[in-house]
Image (cartoon, rainbow over all chains, first blue to last red; front, side, top):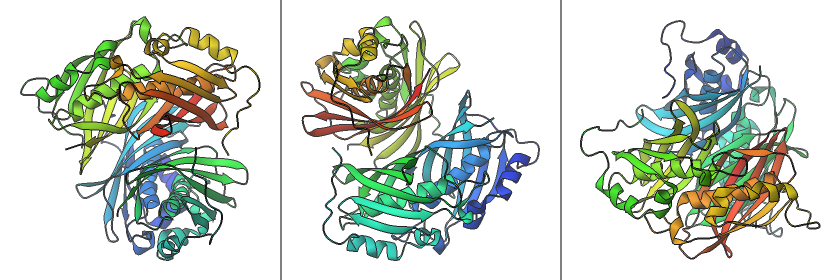
Length: 139
Length: 139
Length: 139
Length: 139
């Protein structure tokens, strides 16, 4: 059963606010954290021309980075420093310049210092990518 | 047995030169294609402060993007348009601001329009990440 | 949003009944299909001494096989021949001889002839493994 | 650079001989360990009718199990108890009843208690599956 986020309280945990304040890469790409609490996060990104690859679509690394930041926001939302240890991504549909993307991360299961999170990247209702990450809590 | 690249001929296939000329994201991050021929590629990147995350290390998306570009250069080096369909990455060690990284992609196996490529990201002799990508040839 | 199975109708689609009737490996291991409809399946297995590895726990291949059969039942429940193309599994906890396991497969997303399914293997409420499979519809 | 196995010494490390002596599942399926030393292993299996699935080909779980046992032999060949923590597999070609398969596992990289191993399952020169496993050393 996926973890059910608590919808009360501030939308972004203090630990995530602090982490994202110094995340130069995510803010440089234009990511906006919309929610990050209780193992659940939502992050938005507009695909600008600077984020395209040589095929004229969003670079796979951009889509991965968006999912990875949502994953980092979700797994750090509990207030203890946690890093990504591994991830896999399936590219479902191309994202084009001008698209507005949103990545939603949900805690799937936790054991010891490890967490498994599922992240779906969407453009509106369309799925762009499915990502699964494994996190490692440092402390 | 991994594919053995042919070391004669120009170091970067014409198809890759053309693709990378319009890859705004890879060049914006500072990536440099060093070799790309016969299903094998080598791409370099310096970790600048703009590429760090909120833990002060290279964002996972940066390491993934470097591997993904090396993968794209390798799978497009045969001259037919090919896209990444899926990938998985294991983060072996942290990359710090100031590090010089190099990603080496090698074709592992091919069947139908699908290719499996292994990419290792290194800082000198140290492994930073192991990546495996699945490509899909469009034509 | 995960696919919501329709709970009306017979619990096991006719296409799955036919497929499992000739699945010598799954029945030889002792698997029992409990439900398989509309992209959703539930399959049970008791861990007998024959299924243990040299560490005295269920062989990783046994846990994978149970998840893979649940995946096959789910992706063939729509009535068109579909095969597994790839899968990844994380082993969350050990399964011991004597444990009763259940694997639940759910369709996550579909595009073209490809499907992505999530399978969780449990012993009661405890998660034993998380599996994600990619299917390919043949017809 | 993949780990190069040392080809001197007995072909199967004592730690692997002991482990496989009690691996009921692998021997029940008919697996034969041909080599296991220094992070490298080779395991054979004949596809009997009992190992087929409902499509009349080797069950995905059989191919995975063969790769997983080769992985276990390789990562336990150093003499310290090590378990599989995660794995991913891509099915490249179908294996038929009557086929003789061989899985070859090679250590790719090691860090802390973690190892990454690549396993290729072949029928003669043809690739049947590509597997990558992550091991965790217990002691």
